[in-house]
Image (tube, rainbow, N blue to C red; front, side, top):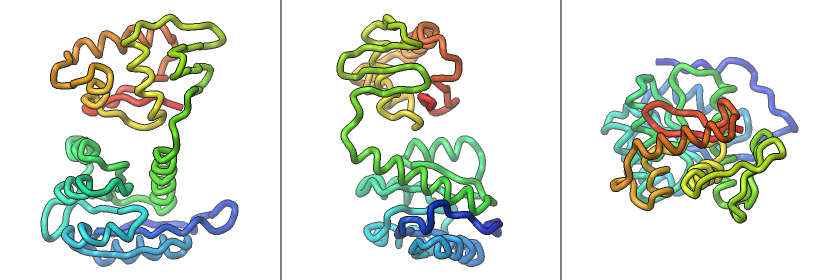
Length: 237
């Protein structure tokens, strides 16, 4: 297995902010190529080849790049263990591109994933994206979220689209607000139901679908709320 970091990768505005990157990867050639790309951009890569090492070394990392096929076990188990003790951003790197595995990784708390082989500029863009989302999650949530021409006032529970107020039911607004607080980020269906209804195990999945259909019709903005089949939903923008 070989990586395909081609290029040079352009860095706008000079050198990037240095990140401590923990690379959990057993393939020596792949690990070396990824580490070189990261170091060239001013980051500080540390490579380990076993999942057990990640349980200790994650404490010194700003972001973790995690392979799923490791000599001492499944990377999904490593991810599960990390999420019990840390919220450090985790980007899964895997040669296994089947949807079921990737959905499981997202369910277990992966922030994003890349299927090997990939370009160096794509890897760097994904790292930037997960770090940006991580920083945003540490800040107080905005009271007003604007996507396209839709303004969602979370405090006043008011929605305006194209300058006109949209009348929503309480549940419809709760669905939209939950997605708006994580704009641009995938929200798992069970988590959405848990936040809207209070307990996903007691909520009826069909009910959520009805509210989403009505919400989309009232907003009349095709593509604004994306369905991620097998996982959940995302408010675009």
